Image (cartoon, rainbow, N blue to C red; front, top):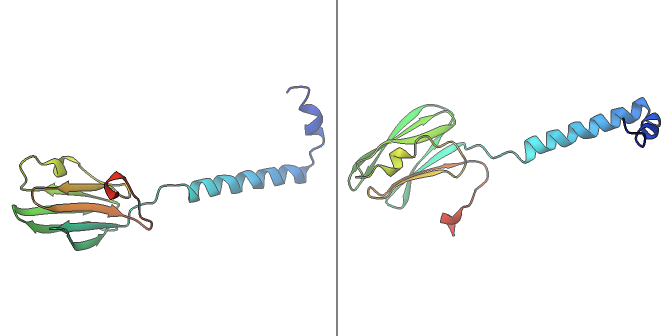
Length: 129
């Protein structure tokens, strides 16, 4: 150790080390619980600008949505969701794959269907402004 630190370490008592350990533990716990990203808890399905379903993300399910071009199939597994099939020409919403982050969205514009994941708190991105 550096000579400048050694005198300070000699002044530390067992109770001081306990306080340092407690402070580090509280700081790590706060950082992991308060600043972690919010997990999505539900999938919001919209068709024609209206919310047609709010589905929980805690169990597997399938949901069919009718749009102007036909049926869009939404597939849900615990903690994630995706657009499995869509009658749109370019399949952009299907190519998005599994959505698992709060605020993530897949938009099937030609069929006017969208899928968005939401959690406890709302997240905002550039599409909200």
